[in-house]
Length: 304
Image (tube, rainbow, N blue to C red; front, side):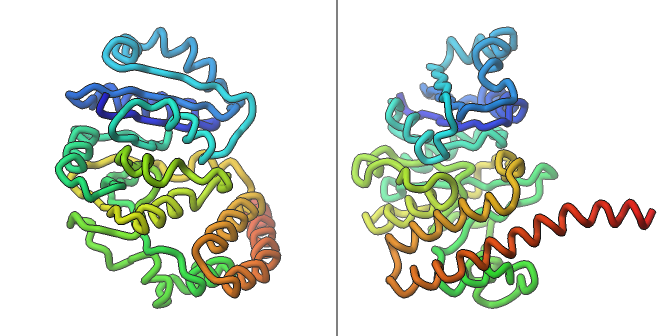
């Protein structure tokens, strides 16, 4: 088995269907498997995986051409732990962590695996991600620094997006038409050479959501593996469809906890203390944003 594709789903039934269909429509020439982990969805995703796909024209291929596995969790275990369920079961030499809100395009799977196989110093690979309108989506960043994360926690990235520290972190000058090594790639399409997993292990399950792929890229670099952006393969990414269902204050808690864990692993105690100090401030700001989002529609109706 050359490739294992792992998809963690939470309440994105129709997007998951399109994702699986895109894999079938753009299947590679080599052997691969699909492992879908459903994190206790309430939108009928589990039933679709067990029953509805059986009536779909793609399931014949889903059953016969690939090895297909479905894991239905009784509770939401988070992104890292659910992916590790798939990784433990995966048989492929290459492991693709693929978001359910993606649609792989022509030859994407074939090209990314071939490129990685030809460059054994690459441990992690991301492809060119596209917005639904086919424009290029920003998908690479530098590793987090205390200054960049301070600005983000204080929501200043919304007010001053062109600030130098933020431009450096978000790599706003990155050339998406060039194959090149980067610090980190977005986890929506996250191809891993199995030898990286053999050396540094699976994803850190202390991350419930967010920063697990940043952590993994950091660990891979410290283990002398490269993380690469590859322009010659494309995937459409809807972006954050699962967690658009979660209020900002709750998302901020997830983000803060993950950021704290990341800084505790890779930064100084001073940096951790700063993040701890900013933690309640960021929650208050997130709560304010939630309030504004609720208030603005009412105001618009009055104006009409």
